[in-house]
Image (tube, rainbow, N blue to C red; front, side):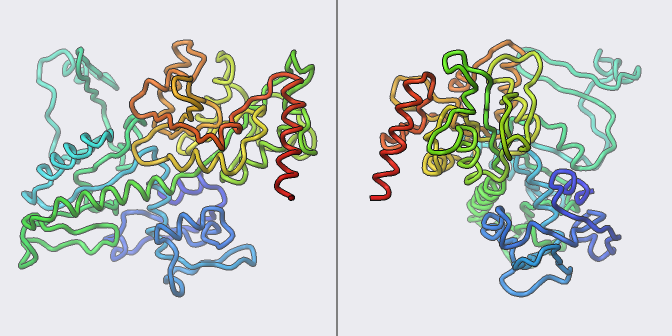
Length: 448
């Protein structure tokens, strides 16, 4: 169920189950709702994003009681079922929208036009078609059909330009979606009209008598096929939903702490600057902009950092790629910002500049310090859709993320001169001493 999915992905949620009545099932085909949502509090780090998305009620509460274990101010609930859907959909690596309507309403024609528009804008789009009758796409007597009829559990065929797969399937909508490739920005679902998916419901006419009853679902936008403005309204809605989905994504941070440095004579993470070790400073800065920060690497760290969440390197993968892959696999639905421990000047302003370049359709932000130079793969931002590319690099034995700069969905914005120092690494004793002097001068100038 959606609620169980939420609890597995977001353990701070507590769920109480009950059966949905037939009347409520018209609104959403889920079997449980979230009764208690600790995330919907003023103190939650995600509260601003959910308030912006309209998931906080302006007045009072919904009919479902919201309680909280802590005595913190509660903002209220928009609708528990709607919130459950939001959590469920945001846990896919791509945005999912439905295109619904009764037979001959014009769904296929609309999807064709939407596809053409979105592809022209650079988006990668998948389609899930729900067939009311038995699918017929393989020809009887062909090799692939014979393999399937002989009992193969999975049949796939390809030529130089396209491929298809065939397998027995009886799962629900989320099961179908989980089989889609991650490298998509959006999946449009034709059919599954009772699923409660947000999306478009298209009806013939211009606002007069309708042939069929229009579903009164809060997540559906009704468009009139014969209204000349309907396509513009559809595209505006899709762009708004893409932006909302993009905003909802959790930002996680991975700090590569490395190991012993031969040139420094110790672990870089343990070098001190401004009264704290490198690892403490970097961890603190990442905590300002990320909902969750984890350590990547094996270096031993003192104090509270020694008890911080840590991910082991992926076996058989060399260099920083081992830690980066570990992060991507641990939370594949999150946006990841990755930093190295030897970048002591990465601060809130620099991170906010990186994150300001995120937008729907962009899969990674790799800063560029000057034209003609290599892009920076540390202190950079990676969206879930790019993780598959990184996996392919690891399989091919490519140990650097620089190859991502060739990808059409990766951008390399030029860092302003006022922020360029933030990407400076400390690799020698002399650079470490210089970094301490610079930090003291900066602190003095700030206090003055």
